[in-house]
Length: 394
Image (cartoon, rainbow, N blue to C red; front, side, top):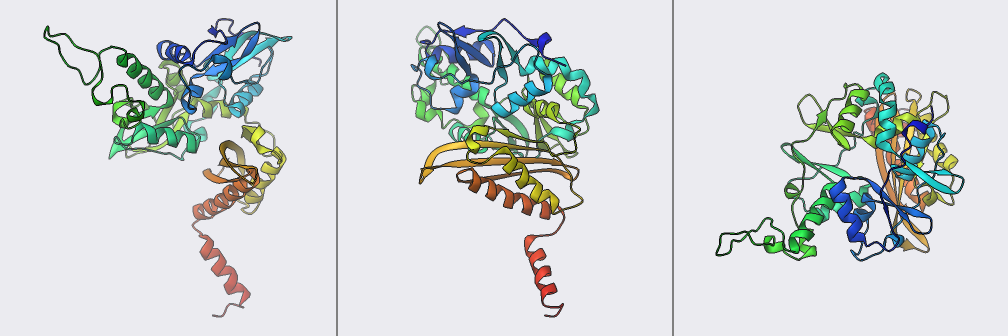
């Protein structure tokens, strides 16, 4: 199946000299995920996520913000398009004919087109069990750091029970509202003039971007939260996300507490799985992998899997994030590894200078996690080995 039916020729464009604040305002008002920057020709794409994930000056020009997602043709295969979206972390790909961009394809349109075929899977098959949560008092600044450090874009708010959820887009929308209030709109921290009218401003945080980072999660979160269960058919869960414009659903257990999260990215990833016997490994931000190769990463995962004959790895996903910090020329790399197996899902993170160190740390954590799932700790295994080497005598 190809993507021709879901290619759209209607998308928002901005000139290269458009200010970041203007694009940010458009995202908040329209709910769109991305825009195309065009001058004499196609320059690139700016996404909502870019404006939150980086420190962006409001006066910065669009031309300096653009990213360059992979381009696809009208007849590109659905699986390949989904793979490119997952690995590039762009859910909005330009469609080209020759050297010209003639349209776009979005993750939402792609999922709508294939959703009827997802009924063979359930939420349990694809959802992420490694759930990072915050409390109602966690600050916006801390949440942004959690997004950056863990390569996630949303966190549930928990206080005994599930209270809400905060996403990158909630923070973007909130910051735009506060900027507008700063220019005279109404808001929290209201005061009334002698005529009884509401004056502008928003209390003690007025005009103070640094103090905006101190705002608690409960002030920006969405509530109530849309939830699902592990046994819900994947097509039904995906349809709810698409129809209600949710980017994710919180997976709850029998006690009603959060046990994981399913996102549209998780669903896209499931489209890339194959029936082939070899291990399927995907790498996001593969350019950060040099001088290693994708085969090196697959070999790393296979080394762990081969030690445990009962475990079969169905799919593995590695997300790489490069920090600005360096040591002897090697950048600090965060490697987040997720493997989907017949024994459940395992998620680990490793951080080190250069991809080799980061992935080595992740591999060691992965091995420990698998051992723990079997009820055998590393210490127990080593003690058993030493006992055997000593001939069974203490």
